[in-house]
Amino acid sequence: MKVVQRIATWSLLVLVAGLGIGAWQGKLWWQRVSAPVSEGAQALPVSFRIEPGTPALQIGQKLESAGLIRSEMAWRLWTRWLLLQNSSTEFKAGTYKLSPAQSLEEIATQILTNKVVTVSFTIPEGWSMAQMAAYFESEGFFPAADFLAATKQIPKDLYPWLPDGLPHLEGFLYPDTYELIGDDITPTAVIRQMLNRFQELALPLYQNSPKKSEFNLRDWVTLSSIVEKEAVVPAEAPTIAGVFTRRLELGMTLGSDPTVEYGLGVTQTPDKPLTYAQVGTPSPYNTYLNPGLPPTPIASPGVGSLKATLSPDKTEYLYFVARYDGTHVFSRTLAEHEAAQARIHNERDAKGN
Image (cartoon, rainbow, N blue to C red):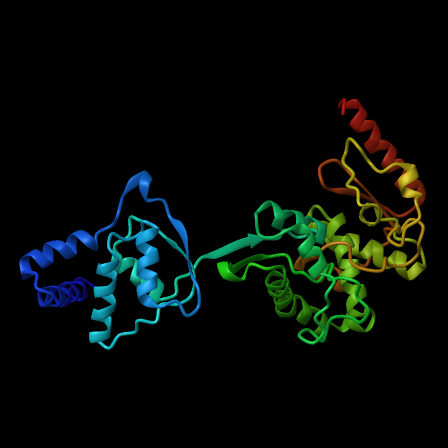
């Protein structure tokens, strides 16, 4: 690297000398104009945007105006030297994080090698589209309404495995950590990355499972999303999936609180549980009132819940009730279940909660 820099410096000196400046003075001049503009607190990175087709000389002018380089003339000499060396002067369009603490050569190399800004984001397992939308807006990506509108556009042409008749993409936006190029942070780009990840990681689980004859894809993801919302402790997911599977087989309602919450757009807490009125409110998502599965998933299930739904425990349990530590008490009969509910309620009252 030092050899390359030495060659670059002396090649530029030849150019400078050819302009009528003495070699020694040229060397001092180049060292000064190509040095970083500032250091420390004054050298915070800034976003620098290069539009497609922007000429190299105009880039130099913009860099100088932005306070990122000392001299547009030095930039011009640098690009001339690249031409003399038969090197590329095709500076890539994009958004870059550049700092006045970088030398001119460092800035030019970053733009030539297309080291653009990237943005990462993480979607936790069990989030709904509404939670994702609020997150993206809070992070300054785009308005929540734009994201929710985009989730109603079902790209069957790109993802033909998506079930027919989906009103939106709830459940199929895979929860994971992602990275986007700064110029492509749009709802559509985010959604396609998440669908790609579902296609890569979730879809093969279903396609390679003998259970797929018992579930269509939509029902699998829907049940998995309910398991995801109920199973706070991952180790309980197969048992919870087993309870729901058995209730479906027996024609019982699922009786899942998270589906009621989703249908009403509310979130219960230990201090503010669902009321009898809410549980009794008609909704397509109310699995206390409606047998079978709700019309769509209610959240994005992770791989643990997806696998648990394909391989549920064979269990005699038909009920479960949450403790206040994330675990559940499982029961075989309604009487056992009601006793467990009363015991947990009394324990909470005894602790003054």
